[in-house]
Amino acid sequence: MKNEKLKKFIVNQLEEIKAKDITVIELADDSSIADYMVICSGTSSRHVKSIAIQLIKALKEENMPPIGIEGEDASEWVLVDCGDVVAHVMQPTTRDYYQLEKLWES
Image (cartoon, rainbow, N blue to C red; front, side, top):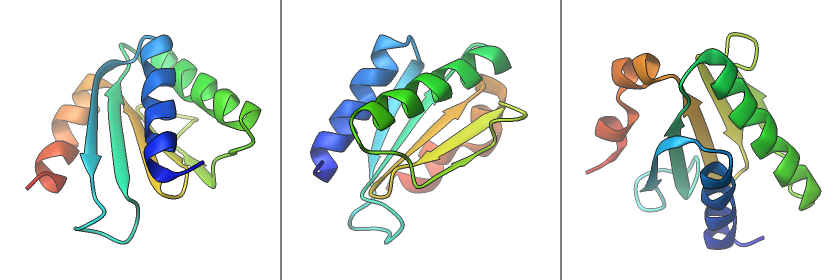
């Protein structure tokens, strides 16, 4: 799946599973870690974990299993690394604390 297509797929999946406040940041010109970062919120640790699990399942069904997954146990912040697109599923308080949007947006 191409980067743009993968980004759209991830955003569509997050919308379908009721993730909140979905933000996409283009990183291609600013970083070599990924081309896109997708950030969203869940309403609780259970919701964050559920969003991440459903996203991972959908990616696997499309033969695009994530390269890495971090933070599933605590479920305050789950990172799903899909190579050129990195998804961050966060609780609102964690998202407010780290402010990734401010860090990466120019």
